[in-house]
Image 1 (tube, one colour):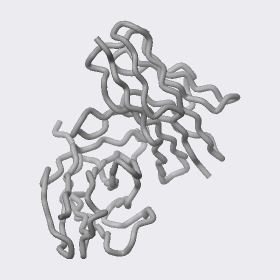
Image 2: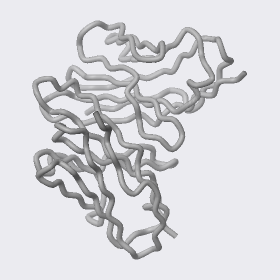
Image 3: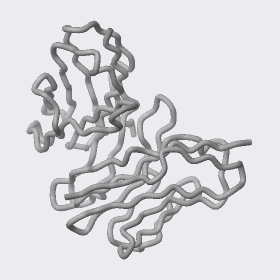
Image 4: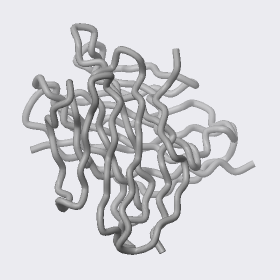
Amino acid sequence: KAGVTQTPRYLIKTRGQQVTLSCSPISGHRSVSWYQQTPGQGLQFLFEYFSETQRNKGNFPGRFSGRQFSNSRSEMNVSTLELGDSALYLCASRYPGTRDTGELFFGEGSRLTVL
Amino acid sequence: AQSVTQLDSHVSVSEGTPVLLRCNYSSSYSPSLFWYVQHPNKGLQLLLKYTSAATLVKGINGFEAEFKKSETSFHLTKPSAHMSDAAEYFCVVSESSGTYKYIFGTGTRLKVLA
């Protein structure tokens, strides 16, 4: 069974640009959530999608957005990049069904560097 | 409101000695508690989870944790550290009230000395 796949793994952008990150969850997992990880702030929740609908949202500005497709794949977009957006962006999927144990399955992340 | 506190940001142990990583939580409801491990440039991997069954939870790689409601603690232990245990460890609390919301601790970096 394939794990959570995130692409790209590494990318470099400049201030003011925008970026789109992709996440393919484990087959059958309909919940996808996104986290930002930085040395200073740790792991911070961005948003969660379930069946193409945003279900939860963290405290991030509107420059951060996401969406989920009918096949459960998800993308997140950051517009007008700032230096502080440099981080490891982690995607996690979950199986929210009767067998749900609450476990999150993480991808290896997309490391974004903003110059 | 939920919160989680990892009491040590760094822990160093010698190989073969016990590991103790401390975690305290706060939750208004019956929480689910997790420990995750993250190796450099990798995603997080679940070590173990507590979801209101047995209070002593055994996980992978010889780790275990005990849920102590009276102390609101969920400390992670391992009897004998191995070099491969060097990583960052995250304690996570969640209220399983339909839609899970997860709160991550700030992490404990474990260093294992030869």
